[in-house]
Length: 236
Ligand SMILES: [Zn+2]
Image 1: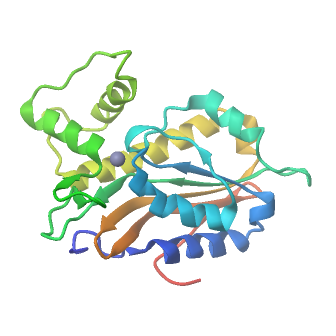
Image 2 (image 1 turned 60 degrees about the vertical axis):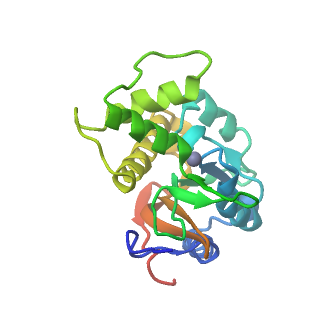
């Protein structure tokens, strides 16, 4: 296990604690805030969503494979009707992050899952897409029976220079930034979201045999219309 590729990664429980403390400063507390998660469908991401649930209550699920946000404006509108707001303000905390494994041989993009005697890919969707890029054969069509993978390909291709094959850490970082960007652009179309207090935490969720970590990415709390960057690299 080596976290060398992810300097600054912190244990997942500590990460969630720091995000909660950062929100508390601006009055975002669990009783008044709806948590939302944009994480991969992989059951391994429960290592992140469980501490989020423990801190904030059950989270609204925003995402599909790899954590991509295909819920769109209608999806965010649904979440809006679930958020507490008895005091006249809506508050949200959103975690958006892809995930990645590191196996005991230090291979990035692989993980040993419980009950298995071989390693498998994580994130499987991003690793599969990267293999397609490497092969030079990326399917551009929307397959109605493989919708999420089709949409993932189309969305990520928009953010990768033509002919470029990023390594899996680079591709995961691109996915992280795409998810953050998509959330911001979707929310910006809705006045109710522009007026709300919202904390957004992006990052990369890392699985190792020594436990789970998060490498924090862009993190901010928008409170009463002004954005406050959050530094999660140190205890608050
Ligand atoms: Zn995945």
